[in-house]
Image (cartoon, rainbow, N blue to C red; front, side):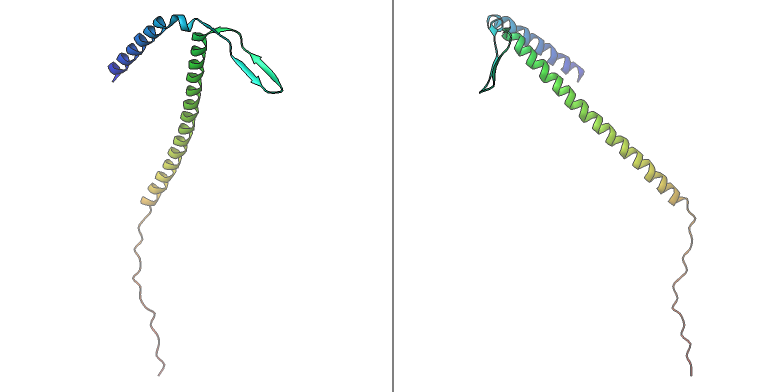
Length: 117
């Protein structure tokens, strides 16, 4: 499995180099983003190369994904700890019930009615 991961990462690296080398003219063009909020303001960003904007968007997506999975992992870890604590408590209860002495039950007998003659 590790070998497949290394091959995949190598393929991704080579593909990225080809992409950036073949599209260098487009990626180096300056791009200025504009946000027009009607009746309030118009915001302009600094002119940045298109490649930098793509890289920043990719990095932001990676960071958000890492945060999402980290929160999910911490939530799962706390749930697992809670389940293990409950399991230990139930095992202890089961062991205490196993070690209880067995008392033989008295057979059920109907009460005798005394006949008055």
